[in-house]
Image (tube, rainbow, N blue to C red; front, side, top):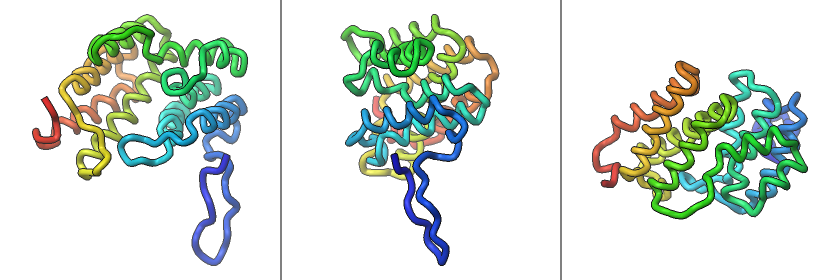
Length: 207
């Protein structure tokens, strides 16, 4: 997997196959190879960048808080059940039960319904998961809220809209995470991102 190319200037740097934060994390490296293949061709909604950048940012937040290899690997993989054909059993066979359980815990449970109903089921599932799963969920929400805020603030043409249901879900996630994780740095960071969204012009939010 190649994430960067040549650097400009008189000296050519070797292209990096992996971001440096995974150098001493063998399970995360395997997860990154697998996730990049599964998400191939998918684009991040806010800026049409390769989608793999989203789980990478989530993983880096957890690595920066000294979470272990299996939790960071789960962060890299956290969208594969929802957004690719990969199922729980395959994750378990490839990466072990612990990683598969963490990914499953932050994936939307099966069942139809409205956006609000589906997200309520997800929050309920995370509420019953362990603290590491809650941390993966928190990091995901930090990155998503940041992507949304930047896209709206820059008026990017492909930025997702911030409708009332989505905003309600994010604030409900914050309440859940404050209950589960207290003043964890990722929870405080999520609160900042949501408060920053409140500073955007009202026209950015669809009712």
